[in-house]
Length: 184
Image (tube, rainbow, N blue to C red):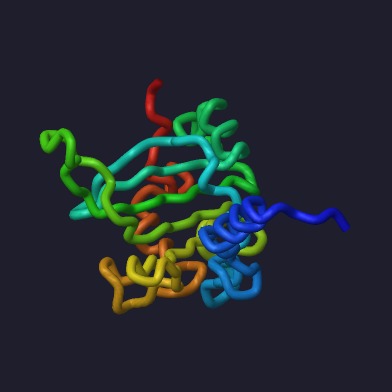
């Protein structure tokens, strides 16, 4: 084994002390599951998906993201062409509490993250909810930990894989999807 110099040891100790501990798959956000089957782990990597659009509904602002299957379907004209999204299509909607930008107060920007909502198209698994499964996960800003949303949250969420179905029935003709791909 190669001997390390004192400065190298000090540097290594600083790096290790400042490193953020990795979330364990068994205890981190990817271990969470909405009752009746929808798991956070099904959306691993959502942070890097393409932007579909942005929205503001009530007090929260959001970015709506889509996995490659979802984006490909949008580019093919779904849902405006009357065709459904294919199985495997996924969306993530990240909500933030708006805040004024410190260096430019005229701008409203995302503040602390409030939650993340997910949708996945799986027509066999979710046959009784239009082929879609939903999940909402609240973020506790103090601990930085997610928990499945419940009926006590704002807005209230039925904490099962059909939690979004009732709201989305008004867009049944659009395959239960509100959001259009924003023009670039």
